Length: 87
Image 1 (cartoon, rainbow, N blue to C red):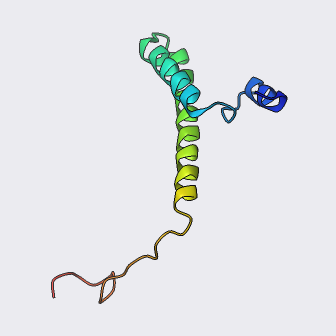
Image 2: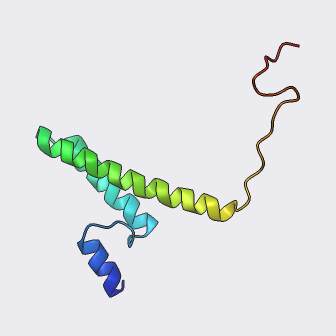
Image 3: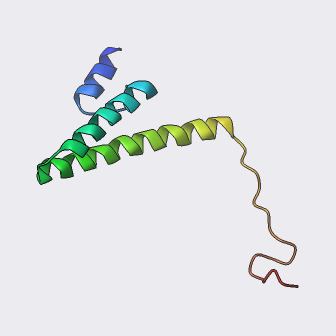
C-alpha cells in the first residue's frame, strides 16, 4: 500500500481496499449493525453499510464496462414499442 493509499484510507476512502478486504469489512460492519441495540448507532452503521454497497456497485459497474466495451444496439419490435402485441 502506497502513501497515497494510506492517506486516502485515513480520510475514509474505500477505493484502496481490494475486493476481498471490502467484502470482509462490509460483513463485519453488517454483523455489528445486526447486533446493535442503540438506535443512533444503528442508523450510523446503516448509512455506512450503504456507503460500502455503493463502492461495491461502482466496482461491479466498472468491471462490466471493461468486459463489454460496445453494448448492443437497442432492438425495436417490427411495428414499434408503443403498439400492442396482439396483431
